[in-house]
Length: 135
Image (cartoon, rainbow, N blue to C red; front, side):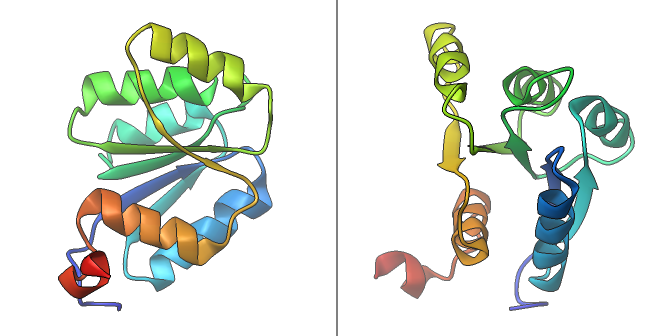
């Protein structure tokens, strides 16, 4: 699929270096321009000079959590699509509070297959071929 789609910018934020770096490589190999951050604070510095089309954000991050970062990102880049993911059951309270405040997020549970992550990203970015969407 490389070269067949518009080269969207994907930002991946996860404090687990193996997860974030692996996802960065997977998205790059699939034709996206991917950047990785290991904390929300690192991501804030990155987006100051590189605006993503999609941010894939771990909910449980050290310092600023993923939901708070998602709100900052959405406020500054309203066209950026957001996809949260987490392997922690404790994220339910954070998501419930965000929903109460009127913020609904797409969220995936870890672990997940990289193909599913790519398909979800393509759906959010409008990159899926029409025949795939109709099946």
